[in-house]
Length: 340
Ligand SMILES: [Fe+2]
Image (cartoon, rainbow, N blue to C red; front, side, top):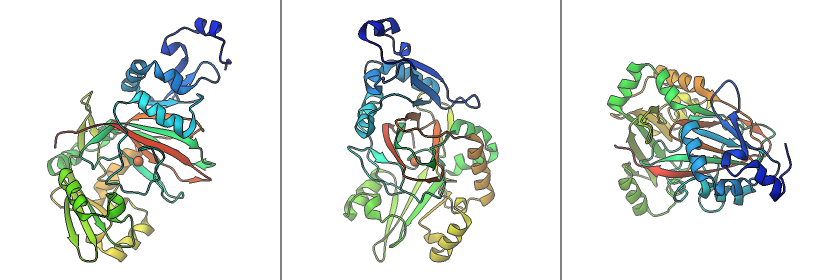
């Protein structure tokens, strides 16, 4: 790669956004992600992004996944700045969360704190919320020694792979996430809702179409019923956009599933999913959906300084097991409310 040129030589590179970067698919096997790399060494990502929002925006809507690599991306602070340069409005807070997270700056989070030996399957962030974020932005501060990829998967592809009869049944009956907040396992409701005040939890639930039930011993049960299919807010393409398989008890590793069921019983599980009318989902249906996700999964290694901007509606993301330290930042932006 060339060195960052002097002012005189810079002029010869041109002033258009695309004069400074190369754009191509990362791999020949998949259209995702699109790799954006600087043509010159030492190019500051935010300096380049600052004047080029329309270009980035157009490329984002066309490609859905932009992996910025080999730029000077400026660590945690640079990441925060970048999110403001490529997305409108504020970064979203993580309420109604399912895993612990550490905060870096203003609504910048590390990705899920979850034992490194486990896989986190493909999911669209917050599919069980009432508002969905169009943009998810990931930044690699510390790349793990091995593994720890954040694979992505096209959920329009997942939609097309699912048997139409199964899809239609879900569309008709919707899907439901049931959570039981029991003391001593998974996140306490205080952390999930980021408050100790029951009235605030209730207000949040009412505002976000979550049924709630306080139970003895400070226990809480919530149920939220959502549509399984989302029409993309810009393109209208149909997307398999839900956590029905992700949170279903049969998706868990066998030893965890057995431990949970024997500890809590089927109805008291910390997480489980059903059809929206409360009916059980056949484990074979869940396996079929998980196979559709697996077929769409695209995996690639993190490099320190990488920043990955994805369409959180069109693309799901996952996490591979890893060794060594790993710090991947994430921010969610540009929320919209789909019809109920
Ligand atoms: Fe996630």
